[in-house]
Image (cartoon, rainbow, N blue to C red; front, side):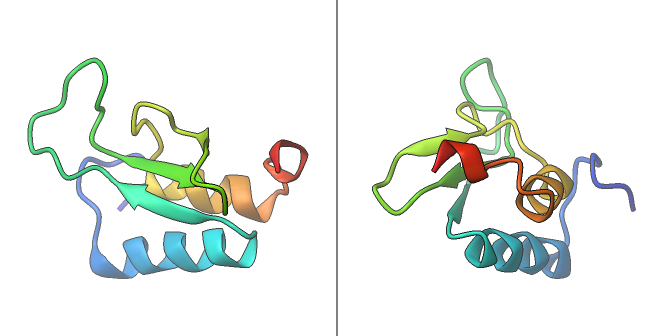
Length: 78
């Protein structure tokens, strides 16, 4: 299964949550079943002050979360 596929398994979800936690963030997953312009059905990265730092429209896949947290991409945004 590729990181950009439409379905996310429980293991992939947990991997993304662990990566975000290690980087000092938490993730929020979209709960809507119908995707639209302001909700793409993916993930958001949220810092400790409840500010969305990436994936404003729930546009991140689980793979995006893992890659961003692992590569230190978000270190500048904290």
